[in-house]
Length: 61
Image (cartoon, rainbow, N blue to C red):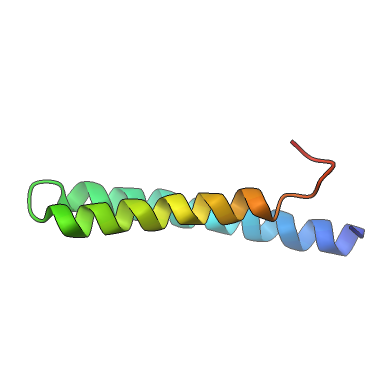
């Protein structure tokens, strides 16, 4: 991976993790109102983290 690829991956990983945090906060707001919405938002947050891990360059933990 070139430096530019690593920078792109790093920027997108940070964005995905920020999105994940926002999705989890949204899920918390639905906790007492709608279990389906809460579950869907939590699953979406989990998927965002999966993608963040998948785009991590091989030489980074």
